[in-house]
Amino acid sequence: MAAQAACRRGRGGLSLERIHRLYILTCLYFSPATLFDKINALPWYRDALCSWADSLGCQAGDSILEVGCATGRLTRHLAQRGALAHGVDTSPRMLRKAQAANPGVARFELASALDLPYANERFDFVIAASLLNILAEPEAAMSEMARVCRPGGTVSVLVPQAGMSGEAIAKLADRLNLSGFSREALRTWHRRAPKMQRDTVLEYFSAAGLHEVCCASHLAGMVLTVTGSR
Image 1 (cartoon, rainbow, N blue to C red):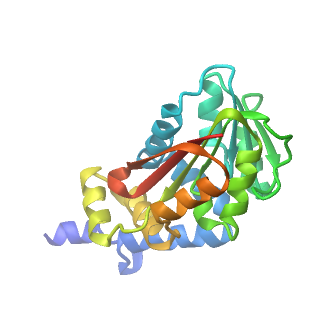
Image 2 (tube, helix red, strand yellow):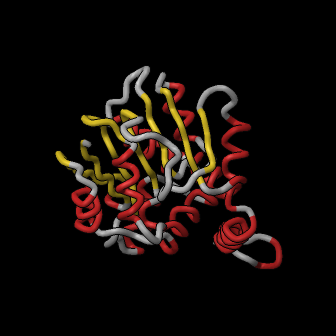
């Protein structure tokens, strides 16, 4: 038992959990692009994103826009599946990482979700992951996403869902056999990320004129996806 306790501690007596937590918080404030790129590469988050995006039915040759693409990992995944993938973000540092990792695979532009630099009805699919919940004007962003989606196209968002308890997150981490940075990243996301109620997101979809709206849960209910047609 003593040896196990020692293994859970780093230098200076700090627990490994606390070391990972301090690292995440330091990156969050001083190098968010590095942190987001690491989190987007974690299997539990990457697989949730890819499962959601793949379920939308995007085919080779379809045009798709990811709003709030961060370092572009999901945009690249879609491009590698044959989509004409575009990504926008407000962070130049995020986009530099996206462009460096995706040469010639996808297109990236610096732009706000509230003022997308595209003509009306431009894309077959418009998506946003973990974005709507952090915006000051989510309803305006939904309106923009609907504007650039063609009639009959698809708009879909993924957000952390309200109602998850710390105990439920711990059980999820155990079920996924998470440890180290991966486990602490899940816990930190749960503690710090603004969450959204299902009915609130549905109201935004309705206000944007989207129909045939459906919802799904991922990661044992931690994540909500909402999808509608233009």
